[in-house]
Image (cartoon, rainbow, N blue to C red; front, side):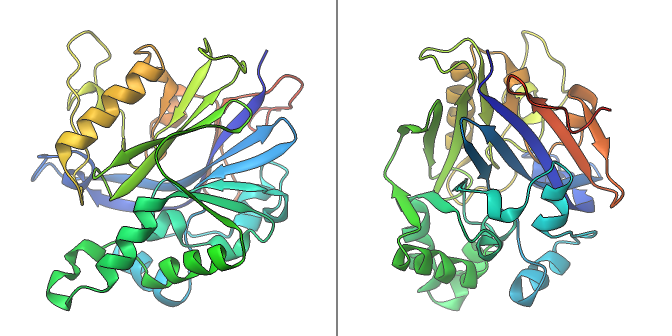
Length: 296
């Protein structure tokens, strides 16, 4: 029995992203493709997303150009590839407030958004600091934070203080404070509806960029794996490693069940297809009775 279908939907990408940003300490080791994606979870009468991407206009476009992002496509185009529209989305879990994850809330008019209270509060604090400390805002659009606060005014923002079970049936939220960002969080889907579950998927946000963050720089899946954190941490790499251990515990140390959305090699691990727009759809699992969106 599977309650939910899960797809990773690429909406743009950076053709050459410095490897040291993805893997801590990988200096002078070249570049790799960095897909920009969000996750769609469909089932139990809900359409949910983990993150919403960014809008390719105003300061979002400035940041996208600064990071070398190309081939941006709107949620209407991207979700259309799996038979959905932005209006179908009723729930959005925001892993953290960097522009490429929290920058497109306006395109989801019927959604309620969940974010860690610490995440949005600390970005408001960071915005108030002198310009000499603005490194902390390197990947944040202040307008996204203001729009997030306006969601609260509309009663469409839920600020979560720590862990939250069954925010939707079988879907849990987990905090990772002072790691990649002030209040990052990861999402677990217990796809058999049980607790404990034998069919859990972890959607890691930016706590894990690529498989190598779990298996070490060699990327080998064996007993010698050494967690190697991502390169960017507003908090600490120590907390990133500890969050990785928590995620691994959640899936019984089956790393195949931790999904890093920035990982290009998902296409080699799960059924995938490239759309007419040159973007990838990866199918992590299908709910009972659901039709594949990547195979005929």
